Picture 1 (cartoon, one colour):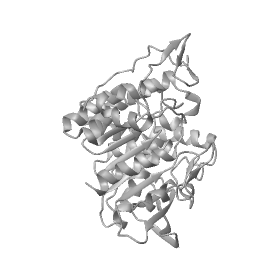
Picture 2 (cartoon, one colour):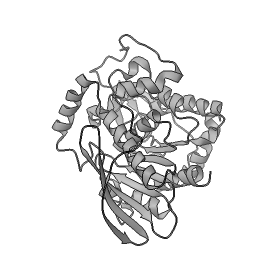
Picture 3 (cartoon, one colour):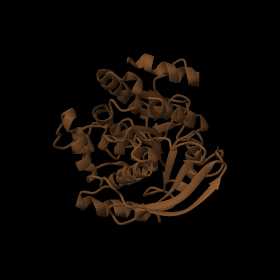
Length: 358
């Protein structure tokens, strides 16, 4: 499907009629209706990867797993189940499992009580989120901060939801300094925090598949959780669908040179990635024909709009080649790095179409 056609439904929903290109002014990239992003001089603008080694599409998934330090996920993941409470048609059960570092990953299982188990969705918050906030009884967002209750809202709409508190989120990060130090100490072992995030998402998916008797499982996440969503989906062809919101999907090269770089933790920058490929090559090679939806606000401080605009045509072409153009959806609302209630509607409709109705 061509780029213009594929954007039509998003433009219709968002009321967008024209996409104004960014302008370069006095060493800055000015995004429409947004603050300017300083071009950082730490890294030369014309820097090229050392020892570049392009990878053919068929080999990208294996190379990505190697760069992330992501080992195979066991078919069966042990997990512990705690107490269950019931309220307003939803059962909430505490559970936990371990990652490969021996750390406990806490989660909350949300199941509709008045309908058969639906497809599974692993819901992963960002750094300011927790499983408890994703599973909050109320669905709301304050003027700033995370969207509360979005996992429970998906459960109300018939999905079986496992909300987790991922590595690096508020519930598990002791301090920014410790988070950064751990990233340095993992590197000599060929491990990365991004790899651990993807691993936790995939272990959660294994747990949810066991609970739902092998039903298809999708991933959804915001910010840090959005990164975990798309990296995990790229590495695991058994994930049925994915929907990152503000998930840093676009171009790592653009982020390095144009984004508000101080907002990014070190986990985001996978060592050696640009020697082989950027995000567009990963998504184009690893996602089709599985359903993949991304919400990438045009003023997201973490991902320059140009990075998304460069990725979209390449990924759209890959989905067209697979014969499933309709399974790739992109929304680019004129907003910053935030999870809005309407994004949840897009996500729920997307998963319903491809995990429930398909």
